[in-house]
Length: 461
Image (cartoon, rainbow, N blue to C red):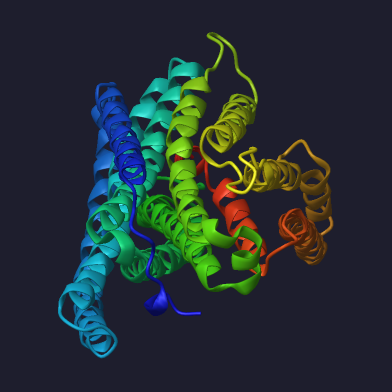
């Protein structure tokens, strides 16, 4: 199968209306992100002793991203022209080759833009959250989570905006152009996630150890330049890099679901099962994937708004975060079934085919179980962490052995859960290989439906 051979049936006026509604949901995500920016920036950054440290971190973070862009831009330009000339040999005329190359630039720009905005506000939110923590646990945590929500909203907003614009412009040939958009997001994520991750670990482990061992400076002492570099690395790696990385996953899973839905038009079992309705139903499957992304915008907003800390109380910060995530997850599942009921009925019988919403819900279940596993293996009150801490009392050898064992065990459980979700998606659809692949892609879409909230969870830290 190649996307070069896929041409969709002509979109109906109703399907074009759906695309515009999905576009509106993308704009809602961006608008909510702007609202959160205003809320965070309105908070008091605190005294000069706080802002001096924050300003140093901001200067370093912006300098890193600026250097990264200057390095990356030459690769982007080379690939832009390479894509154009390569696809000139595949398609006639300039329309599609130029469209693919421009979509590639859009993917790079959207991925980088999501990471940049998220990191920029994380730097601004750091000092404001620290200042709020001097007087209120509630204000500090809620402010930090709102700052994280900006990264999530801009990631889903820019990703959905780019994909929808491509569909509205290229219509029946959108499959060919979407590949360039996904590729652009992947390239930016490669630079930002890997580069930022290496930077933060080099600064943290190398410089911080020198400060503590050779200069006898406490952990995270701002007099140690490595502490500033470490915080710069946290922002460029865990904020900008993570946003770009998740953007890539968010976009690639959408592109994969769309291509697999279109591939059904070339699969004999699917055509035999749906007969004369095959073409129309395949397009509905594509629209269904886009609509689920729109559902995710609103479920993520609901989840972010649900994160509330009781006034005057100190509590496990994961508790309100978990409540917010479960709220977002439940809202997503409800949205799946509502959209399935209203839009995706079986064209042969007219009855609602609930299997598609069930497949997407499998992804939500996978995300919830993964959250529980992560919390279990990393929470300071749970067995794995306390066992590793106890092992540290008998020396570095037992500490390393215990930590490695717990880490490997957590990976095994995660892999088993992922395998179960994939097998479950394939079991739901049995009449067509194309539908089985599409079902797996829907599970991935479900997993990343709450991307806006997931990134808020990551970036708020």
